[in-house]
Image (cartoon, rainbow, N blue to C red):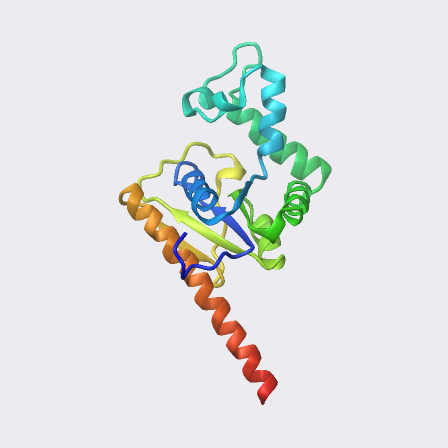
Length: 199
């Protein structure tokens, strides 16, 4: 880990499918001591149990998009409707948010990255918990679904943006710059707080 980068407690990653959210989460986990959480983890586990498809196979794009003949839906469609139509609409809108934030609170040091922020209320809950939202933008990412869960999250002035349009090493450098930006923001906030006490 680079010495001048300070870890930030909670990071939510937003962006369309295939923009690099998982890659960024993996980098934060491997190099900066974060624990990778996901709103969709319990959804994937349920679909894996239901269909007999392994969790590893569900990470494969071709498997995720292929229609399961005896169901007539793809794993992606099953996960989308379980997460949105069941979890958000039938149970409560913040059902998955509450579950993930509760899990984040149990992580030593609070270093958690939530790798699949898909709705505005999820992003706002992360901000309200003292975290930040990082938007991953990839210009050549194609729309894979018209489902509401793929519509994207509105950007807020408090958010950060990474453009993933170069090499993997360039993306890794962008992640480091992002963390350094968080450190500078926190440093300025601490200075302002100290000055307010002196005034």
